[in-house]
Image (cartoon, rainbow, N blue to C red):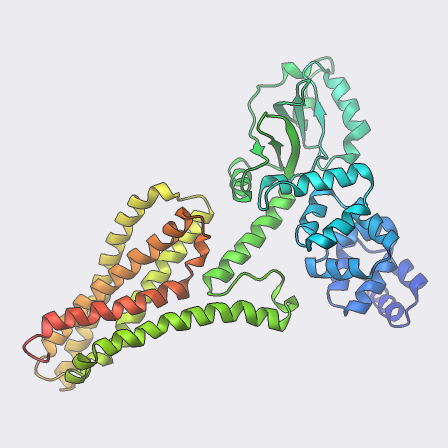
Length: 458
């Protein structure tokens, strides 16, 4: 953005010179204006948006964050609000409306003309998180008996209203999907060819009721810019484009990372999330984890006598339980990510279990040998572990094997169990797994100590 333009825009906003601001903003794209608005206070955002001509306002609006969109809509006149809603692409409008309260959605729907209102209601009627809510009805469809020349004329006449013209869809007289054709396939055949001569009736399609995650996986697998969406009868209802999939994938990845970090997913960017709302999201998980860690104190209290007899065991307690928690966190993170990418399914549980049992035993042995060596080396230069240092070293060795083995196995199985019962696997976050393994790790540690040290320190 040129310096002079930036200065003139800032001056126009400061002086509330609407005419000057409209002139200055005319040189910018919708994306650039949205970026400009993102760093402004609410009053400035409303003033900037109201200075935009209708077409540029509609373009800018689709680049704004959900929070900014809500604020801008609230500040617009009824006429301006209606114009924006009508100008929005159907899929973008659905994404906005599904985040608003039902009462507001009803009011906004009344502002749309009949056909657009009917379309918006239809799209909102599909289940939340379904492909039906992602699709747009703006696509190009042709018939099998059309010539290539007629298809190209159709594209020239109606292509500007389509979300994309990279792919043309072939339907029958009942609008059932027959095939899809890449536009380049039309450019290298004689104009007299019919569509039936260049189709192979092989296509990939989504169902209106498919989960959004399936759409993400199919786009990744087939490397498409758009995919058709059909209903139960195979009727073409719309298309989903890659820009919506990229946005959705980014949102889901962000939400999963936040959950794995031990907090509820944020609805908006970190700096735009109200402080109290952010605290609410974080406090719930912290309280849950705190309550879980209270069982750690309970478990230690159960072995209070053993700790009193062999205080040296308490020295290794943080080492033991943190190793188990870390192993569990590693496993849960790997499994959650593999599930999200479609690399694993619930049906793979036995293969995963077998692999994590091997991993847990191997990693436990590695850490156990290091722990054993630590006690042995320290005992050669110090009497801190007393005459029974070898038994203590064996206890540490076996405890690390047991706790790391359990942590790896539990961390891998928990996301699968949650997914099996329809819960987001990302809920099995690293802090949650670590908390669960902490409690059980204490029990494993002291039970091994009771067996190995019985008759000596215990």
